[in-house]
Length: 422
Image (cartoon, rainbow, N blue to C red; front, side):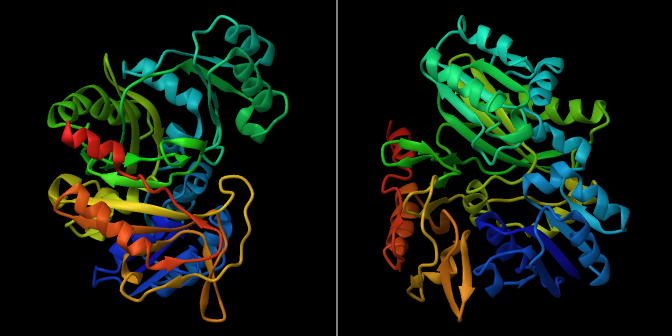
């Protein structure tokens, strides 16, 4: 089979490596891919949001199956377009992807279906939003309604910070159209958990839980990033919590989407907060998380392509989805200055035994060498019987990789280790 993957980051590299395990796949293309992915698949320089370009390539090259992973093309309707050309896909329709594409929709959806989440108000008028933050309890969370590359959320500790967040989104148009509507919600406390789940619209199968590390610096200091590392499973996500989430969050979500004519088929991401009043949804994503995917797939024992096709054909209940009992860790190596400005173009040096365990996110190939081309450059994976072993393995491999201006957090998994020792 000829398979196409849309995207070009570390998440896509993890997916490509798992897809390669299936012998039915004879050709594997990635649009646009990156320099590291190019060593595992054929990369074609067509952007992830160039839907017509993607569809034309798929038709002209006889693609049998497509995997659409990033949020932008899903929200724009990439799956709908590819399916209209007769190409089977893994990923939700445009109608279902709105669960991530609009935070206002997601919050109203949860309200309609009694799914636990933070109290909130939605605003399209900046003056009304500014008036609201004068009386809101602090800290308060201000969110741009649409997609904003993970940068559209501000946790405001002061009224002035809340005012600035409102003005930046609604008056200064920092996030373009995404900030024309904003959601202002209460600040929740408790351990955060990321859950990716396969769903065919009828059955939902949560994957192993994970814990992300968003802040750029050790000790959860510095700016928010796309993620500096992950560990799986998340020790706070106990069997009892999982059971409660299935009952109050996961099943009501897929049933609610189906009832509203938005049948969701693909990977549904639940960002959860385990509050003193029980698990609540912070956000939905309509796709695999990054860098959560890197650790979750490292523990997947079942064949990924078999699961993908079962989701597409709505027979997920018939296929095994099994994970190993061990732990996985991912440490991100980033360019100094990320998530703001940073320099590019530095050669990446990797010792040979580390290479199979590295997932490339922001690098391109030049004269046969990988050079940095992004903020998050690569993720280094370690697995083990215990969390400590997984982390030790990942960090040992980090030491075997270098490029100018590289930085990484040295405390990935520290919170998780504390929780396991408690």
